[in-house]
Amino acid sequence: MLRTSVAFGILTAALLTVVSWFNAEERSRINDSHEHALLAAREVSDLLGLTSEYILNNEARALRQWRSRHAMLVTLLEKDAAIAVPTSVLSEAKSLEDIFQRLVDTGAGRSDLQDRQRALLVDQLQIKSQILTDMIDNWSAEATKAYRKAEYRSSLLAVVTPVLVLMILLLLAFLLFRRVLNPMERLHQEVMAASGGNLTGFSATSANDELGELSRAFDKMAVKMVSELRQEIAVRETLELHLKRTNADLEQFAYVASHDLRQPLRMVNNYLQVIEKQLETQLSDDLKSYFNFAVDGARRMDRLIVDLLEYSRTGRSAETEPVQLGKAVAQALLILTEAIREAKAKVSVAEQLPMVSGNETELVRLFQNLIGNAIKYRSPDQSPRIEVGWRKQADEYLLWIKDNGMGILPEQHEKAFMIFQRLVARDSHEGSGIGLAICKKIVEHHGGRIWIDSGPGPGCTFLMTFPVPPMTQAIA
Image (cartoon, rainbow, N blue to C red):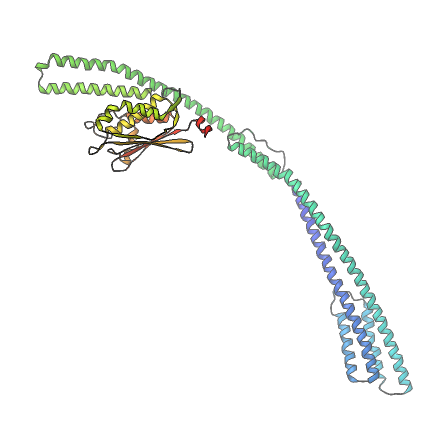
C-alpha cells in the first residue's frame, strides 16, 4: 500500500510537471505568433506608404525600399515553422508583389490610359493590403485568444498543482506514520526494552512489507535470545550451586582439618618441652638446638593452622550491617597500640570516613592487617608514617593506606595476595604469608577490590573500593 501510494504520488507529480511544461511551451509559441502578426501588420502598412511614395515621385529608391520591405514581410511569415502562420495570409502577402510589379511595368508615362491603369492597380494593391491587414488582425486575434486560454490553463495549474501536491503529501504522511513511523516506534521501544534485559516484549507485525519482515526477524531473534539466555541461566545456576557446595565443603574441610590438627600438634609441642626439661642436664648443645628447632617448627605450624582457620572463616557470614569505617580503623589502631608505640609510628586518618554495608569484625581485621603490615615492614632508617585516606567516585568509595616502608616491587603485586606467599625472608620478619590473602577475601566479600600501587623505591599504597550503600545513594 505504501509503495503503491508513493508510486502514484511520483507519477502524479511527473504528469503535472509535463503538463506545466507543455503549457508553458504553448504560451511561448502563441506569444511569438502574436508578435509576428503585429510585425507583419506593421510591414503591410509600410508597404502601402512606400507604394504611395513611388506613385507620386517615381523614384528608384522607393522601388528598392518597397521590394526590400516586401521580402522582409515574406521572410517574416516563412522563417519559423513553429509559428502557425495561416496559408491564406502567406498567399496574400506574396500576391502583393505581382500587383506592384504590374504597377511598375505601366511605366512613367502620363497618358490617360496609363493613369487609369495605375489607379486600378493602386486600388487593387490597397484592397489586397486591406484584406491582408484584416487577415493578419484575425490571426493576431486568434493568437490573443489562444494565449488567454493558455494563461487560464496556467492559472488553473498554479492553483490545482499545490492542492494536489499538498493532498499527496498529506496522504503520504498519513501512510508513513501509520505504516512506517508508528511500527518503527513500537519496534524501537521493544529493542530498547530488550537492551534493558526484557526479551519478552517483542510482537511481530502482520504487514507484508520490508518493515514487517524486519519486525518478524527481530521477533525470531528475541525468541532465540530468550531460549539461549534461559539455557545459559540454567547452566550458570547449576554451576553456581555446584561452586557454592564445593566452596562450602572446602571451607568446612579447612575448618575441621585446622581444628583437628591443632590438638595432636599441641601434644607434640608439650611432650617436646617435657622431654627437654627432664633431659636438660644430659643434652648436648647440638641436641638442645635440635629441640629448639622442633619446638619452633611446631609453633610455626600451629600459627599456620590458626591463620588457615581464620582464612576459612573469613567471608562465611552473610549478615551485613551499616559499619562506620572510621570506627573500624579506630578499633584496629587500638589493637595495634603497643606495636605503634614501639615503632614510633605516626598514623594519620582522614576525617569522616564513610559508612559501608558489611561485617564490622572483618573490616577491623582488614585495617589491622594492612596497618600492621605497614608497621612490620617499615624502613630501618626512618620511623613509619602511615596515611589512611578516602574519596567518593561514582557509585563507590575509594580508600587507601599509604606508608613509607620497604615497598613492594611491581612484579610482586599479584603474588602478594596469594595464600602462604611471603615476599621477604622468614628469618627477617615473622609471618605466615596469609594476611594479605585474608584482606583480599574481606574486600571481595564486601563487593569491592584491592590492589597495590608502588614503584621500585620505598613506600607503597594499598587501594581498595567499597560500594556506596543504596540508602546513601538515595540520600545523595
